[in-house]
Image (cartoon, rainbow, N blue to C red; front, side):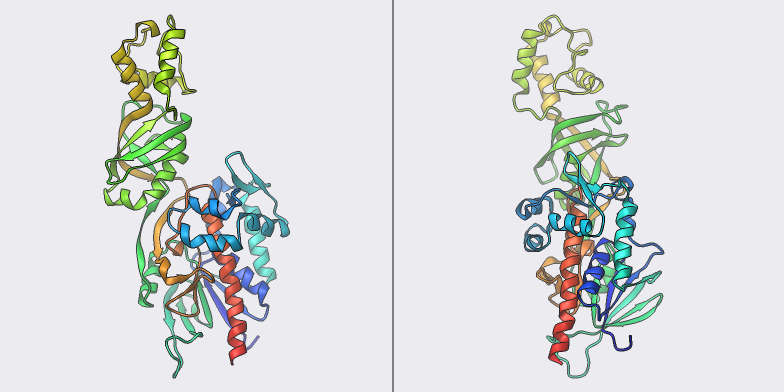
Length: 423
């Protein structure tokens, strides 16, 4: 339609699609265009959760939900009050996609297929009239101010120069994910970019206590970072890998200490309490009394895998055939230390499957979180990982994308209404 106001969404991921759909449904008079640099859209949705798409988390109280965001906690409270995890469930339910909750709170489509989510989002966009252009790499974002327009004016027309041609737009939203090239372009518009560092990664450890134990897990452990200029700990399941340790406890630590660990080049120490118990020493004393004639190495305690238990017993300098009755006080202390405070040297990191996330992006103080609009460039909006917002694993990063996309999409549609009313 000639003369249609144009909204350009840069990035065909979760936040970009959600914003485009919301905007187009709220104001059908707009021409909403998604510009995706790749040949496929919604790729992170496709690979999330091992191909099942961990859509969100069953944490329905905004004040609890924000605690899972190392960066963005304060800024997201208001947005989550407007569009929460419960709203995400309702949004997809209304479009024929039911979500289910697993024991750890993660939520997936009942189909257990990310394709269900992709079909829903793509179909909703097409029905709303959104134009989806693939292979459109944005090379320049030009803010064009008409003659006589003041810096503080509400309308800031844009020209996006892309590999698929030039696009003039009344409003623009950037939802390009962790995109260094786009961050560089945004610097040219006056925005500050917090340098990105990895988040959600596993710890690389070479230690005889863990050698050839890959695949073993502990349901409840406490991992504490020491020696990196920060003391932070997390509790949860712990997984031994070929490279060291992973699991929710480690991933949470990697997220909340992302910048501190980058500063020490991922060389630090951790202390592991494999039992997560505060009274492990007392329980060992009770076991010594009650299992006097039993062998120590062959009878694991604290629900630990037997092979791991044997390694920790050996690390405490306890012979394989020693019985509990013959355990000395010094050996008891050594075993307690190995179980509750073993020190491990971390010598690097590895990405966590496909869930690689970065800490960094557009400085949050430069964004109005009532609308997700830039405070510096009127008409420019952000959502998703382009912002300095990230979360622990479990569906929380997608929730920030849905919330940001929904609020920005409404604001984009409403802004056009307001602009038209002032002319």
